[in-house]
Image 1 (cartoon, rainbow, N blue to C red):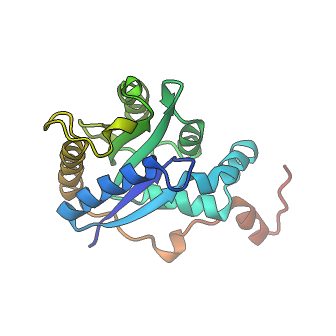
Image 2 (image 1 turned 90 degrees about the vertical axis):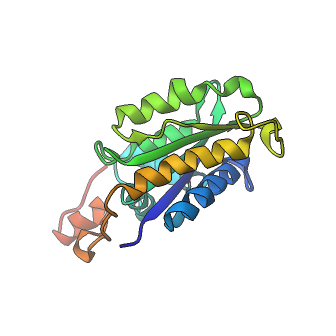
Amino acid sequence: MSRTLVVVSAGLSSPSSTRLLGDRLAQAAARETGAAVEVVELRDLATEVANNLVTGFPSPKLGDAVETVTRADGLILVTPIFNASYSGLFKSFFDVIEAGSLQGKPVLIAATAGTARHSLALEFALRPLFAYLRADVMPTAVFAASEDWGASDGPDGDLTARIERAAGELAAAVSGRPATPAVAAEDEFVPFDQQLARLGITSSR
């Protein structure tokens, strides 16, 4: 059974260094696992995420994204750092995912920012968040500041070396688990409004 790696990118621009870092991590991990790679761009889901927080009902587009994330065999989660923490969009997306959905799932955390001063946000913000969600967070987190792109200053500081080390950890974790089974037709996501409509009930908000 084939495996799937999912990149969740919270980059706000197109193209973005956040998405670029996610792609490089995914390529490195996929080389070792042979897994297929899918990408969830949170920038394209911002309105749906906000509506879900207010109404409690996910749109079909958001529901598909959540399903993609929760059915993944491994996750690569990348956010820009704002004010020493993950972005609000990044956090809001994981707020709408049902509790327990990420339990035991291999997760690689990564972040981008303008300077290396923000690198500790990975350990003080992202790692505690996904530990709380009971994900299996890889030991190596990857941070890329603006000056890291194209730089090469040795095995400990080189971005490529950090990417390869983190991707190797994720690949080992994913390969050591049984592949997630495909979603059966009867288990496909159906928005709550549609479920009520099938029963002849009109929801009020």
